[in-house]
Image (cartoon, rainbow, N blue to C red; front, side):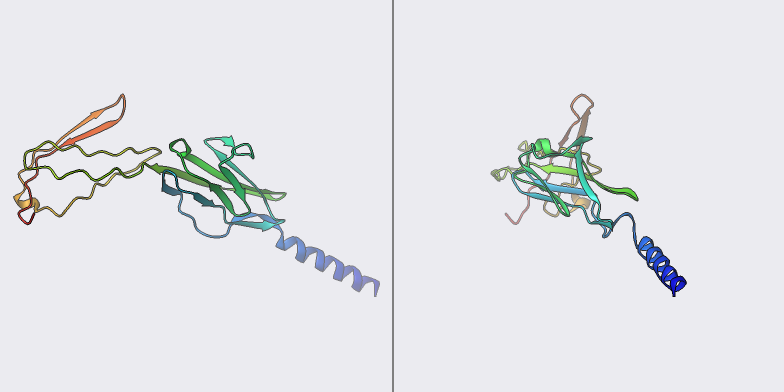
Length: 179
């Protein structure tokens, strides 16, 4: 009977130890996030582990703590109230327990508020369009009304300045007949 109890104890001990392990990401996340200025953002941190991991957040390598008044560390994420331009950057959720750790990395891109729509310009009148982008951007797409590119006689000039990374595009586009 004593050997049976010892064997049962060892079996239970091994089974419980087998379930324990380092934290792991429990669902897929989008590592690039974007939001408009003034809105509230939640970055998820879907991790689980046994024992349950301790969650820590950093922004650009600095620990986020209770002194960051607009930031709140939640059980499964980070909430940022009234997002500002300065909130753009790299965020890391780090989950740690006695068996190891796992990181989830995010790049947060802040989008400026939309500007009021301007009056339509006449053909051959100079037009300037722009946007401000912060954070790491892999590509930029401007979408305009459909244009018949086969009949488009546009002159496009792109200038790049390394000092301030401005992009300027000048184009002369024909007006639409339907307007």
